[in-house]
Image (tube, rainbow, N blue to C red; front, side, top):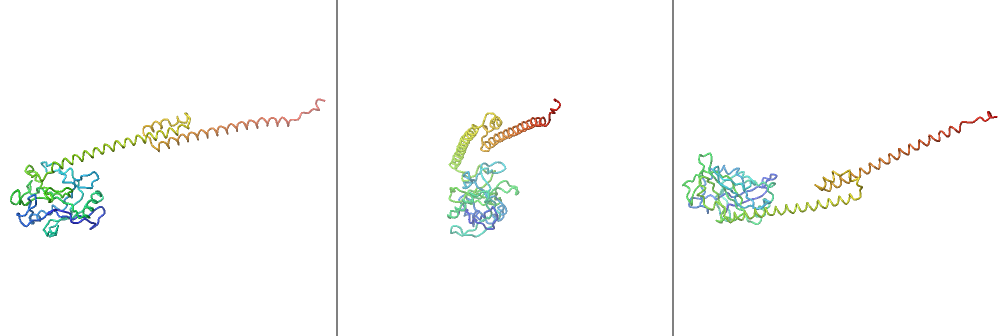
Length: 335
């Protein structure tokens, strides 16, 4: 059975979150039944460890730059302190987990079912992808991640009858995350990633990404880098052309001004040449025009002052003449 998403809606609606309900994994009747990876889930042990599933991250390794379509687990390495998922993003949280009897793909089974939220505001393209898949009844698959329980004194997963190839029953462990997959699992069932870092050399090849998939990831990353380089080149080319156009526009406007007028904005023109902008043109032209207006006003003021001086001088001359005319000569003295 595929571990798949059962429900995606606005239940218990909270702004920025999309409700999600999904099958974490099937629970088997006995260890004679197991999934394609050889794991047999026993209900008692699932119940014992179920609290670790509450609050576990919902994870996605995105295959595209706009974060819309999932790929795999995103595991990059396994170190002494555990696995690293540096190529994976946390897109949501599981808030609750329970054991239920449900019908999936025409089968009635016991299963561990989780419910939680996807962060819609932060991953809107991914939520759109999920909704479109479920609308087409193409339910995305999930893949649970487990590892040894640290507070148990063991660094590894403890199995009921040891780590056998088929029918091994995880007994003491923690649920550490659930990945939403976008690739078709090689075994036609949801991939289970067992994270047992002390035994990582013995982990089967199904716990690793296929070399061809790794190659595809590398090619996609190279294509993305090439696309980024092309975009950067086009952006620089566009900026250079825009700068030339703006400089030509400024020069066409400066033609109408005298050298003295242009000298007033010499520094601004030099700065504009380094970083052209439409606002810069407006600033330069406005400053020259202000200079011209100031000169006109100064000339007008000087002319008015000169005219006033001439008028005052004329009044003084005619005043003297008028006073002389008022002085009468007494001609009787002559005779």
